[in-house]
Length: 232
Image 1 (tube, one colour):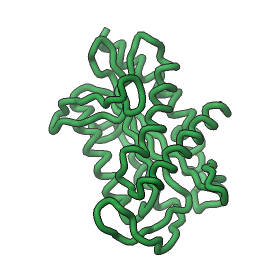
Image 2: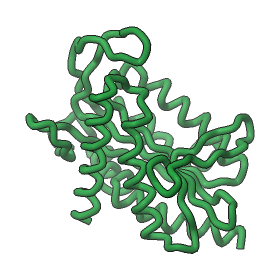
Image 3: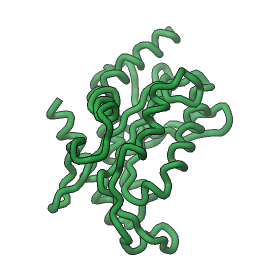
């Protein structure tokens, strides 16, 4: 598992460098390293009976799904016999999290319903920064000046905890994962120590198990097998 965590942090570092070079939170270039890591890791676990489509992996193209309500380009799609079995949505929030937190959450639930209502499995993995810069608005896709640093707290995560504990509805992802990282003085990403943050014991426990990178990928592997069995 240490190798898995190391490879994940390497991908995050590459993604963050791409983000800084492009100077904007919306750059798709920042997504390729982490999408590639997830695609390779998932395929390694589920075997060659499946294929995985993603940015930066294979042919480098995302799969497209005719959802229940709108057509969606999928971050990572697990495919068998040209049928999409499950998709993984990935979000790496690099700045201005508190300002956009509700929009991220509501968008995720809408995306979930759009995909799950087509009988395609949906998993969501979110990467947050423990200390997130807030930038002023700038023209186009360029970020402005750093105004402050916002420290993530328990309240910021409660909406995800509540959804995780909720009954199974179409707006609830089949699987969720959340990883909280920071960058050291050299700009190297590290996993945070939950004890340094205002997280409840319950939140810490869920982050360390159900929402952890290892827990998420392990459950995802089993879930893909389950979804595949429904179509076999």
